Image 1 (cartoon, one colour):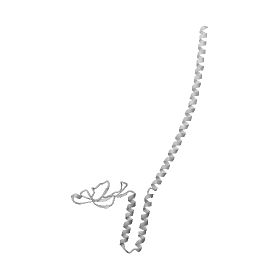
Image 2: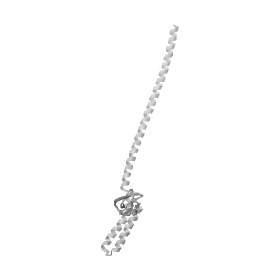
Image 3: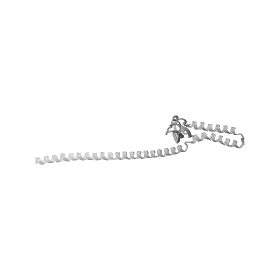
Image 4: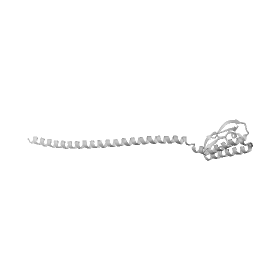
Length: 181
């Protein structure tokens, strides 16, 4: 009987422990459920942030592409505005061709207009290459032909067939030259 009482006491203790463990399990389940809902809320918030960020990036990409196209289309606007007075001068010169009988004033007028055109282009960064009697440089010159010349002219530019141009220190047209050999 004493064994029986001990067994019942042990069973009662085990049942109390199980009940305590059951309470702990219930608490753990509640914590897991709370954490799960917190995690779901955090996931939903992260998805929302991601979608907003993606939409912002797409808008930025579209806007910069549109701005780039507009910039390319309007890049020469400043140059064109500066060239309009030169065009006006040429139109006036054309009108004067009809009434003027002397050639010398026409030559002077055309020379002035040409000088104005060169000045306008120079203000935009255009610069001509000085190639005569320079050493041949394949980065600046395009050799059209070679011509037999004295020993002192070997490898040097003898003649310029077509001028070369720099735009802000970048070659935009190579000078076509004749090189001594």
